[in-house]
Length: 257
Image (cartoon, rainbow, N blue to C red; front, top):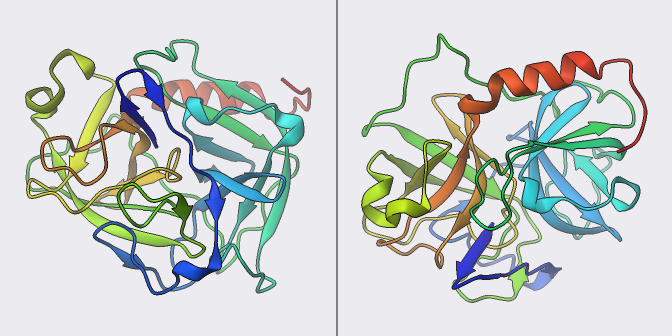
């Protein structure tokens, strides 16, 4: 998650196995392989952002997680990044397409698609997340959501979690109250009105699931788990048609970008 301190964006990408006893901010370690759509974006075998499998050969993430496709690997069915259990599927990336409206300064349009070098094997460990469409009911103030990732487990921490964690958060419809003009119709907020529950650095690009649908992509915020500043997520349903168009037009295209 890109956290904004003035105009500074922080990326903390140092995983360590000594945090197993700690918790994601307000959450907990998940049952291994229970979040079947979760992806880890890595370079030099190091996790730096999350992602979500939405198609057998496509992962969606945040545009601010962009790196050249030649140095990225995508790992599915991972749980403990400090060890391997044999279920992982590791992919090179053949193409990266970020939304043309993406603005690095405002984080509008903070979404990109990564085409895997081959289709994922769908099994009991790996399954794509469903995405909302025009028939999906809108979110409301009673909606409960879940965000997951390998991000830092303590506010101001420099260390990522080695194991996948998740936290339940509330959809917060009055996001303008917290951020005013910093948010727009392409963003949604989620967190806790009392603080203590949030995604944080290292969770960028990961999934916000609400009512069984991928509704958000971890994008930005101010601080972590602050009751006055909930997490801000790319509103995925605003990009459903763009996602479908990109996938359909690149089904048989293996050119890099």
